[in-house]
Length: 76
Image (cartoon, rainbow, N blue to C red; front, side):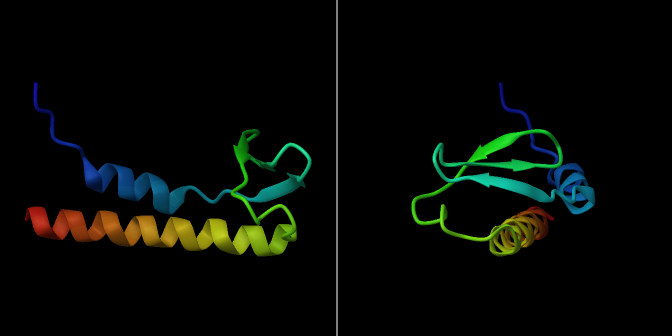
């Protein structure tokens, strides 16, 4: 069964989702965000400050939004 992914809906949800990094647990290689979830740290990120990691999270969000926009444009 082929189901089309609704990229517009995903894009709008991503744009409105502003996750803030609250803490970094370098020992367990995790970081915690204000949504209550813990996410794994990539190797080398355990020495980052919260501000540096927040910048990476925001950049990843922007890149993902750009990819979704491009996919949507390609499908039109």
